[in-house]
Length: 268
Picture 1 (cartoon, one colour):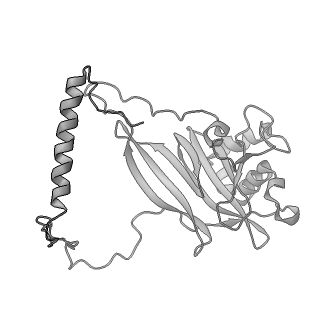
Picture 2: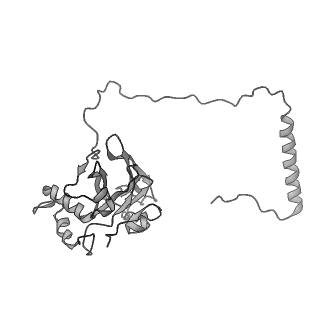
Picture 3: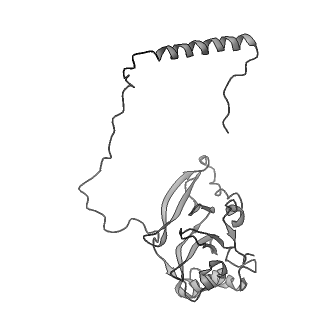
């Protein structure tokens, strides 16, 4: 909303003086139109300054600076759907296939996500049936640009971690084209991007990562990673407040503004 900053006049004389001043200024501007038309200087122009490379003698880097898991796609074994209709894929079956494909992470007494496997027993055959089921409601949108819906899935992990997965049918195979897990404030869909907001150790700031489809890698990459100011910093001596919550704690409410987004029929 644009707030008007015009003064509220209370009498006719003030408006008359204002009108006379405007008329005089307009007449002066019109009189200037009768000039010779010669070019006029617009004042000094700032000099363009190009980028300056620092330490040009350093050799090129031989290893990546940070590993986001880009292009780490994985075919989901044993899960198919007639006509590659991803709406007919059972989200819980997809998670169980991931568990079977990664026994070191999910099984054994020292496995990182063993608790997740135990909670999978509370899931039904077609989605989350019990309150402890870690598989959240699936959402669908065309993220790869092929005109077909893809599936966005969330899995609750221990220590308040959330895994976000995106699945697409590529060459008649169900493929995980994005996978990440983190402490999450919110997950959003904007166009064909998946936006994940995560808390920062800096008071008053959050991380914002935008995942976008890359047709060259056939995967969703972390195209933009930012740290954003979301509130005032914590004064010295006070405890750091908890990260700000999303407008709604339920995935359906945070994603529902999109008219093309449809929730899974397998939700709890």
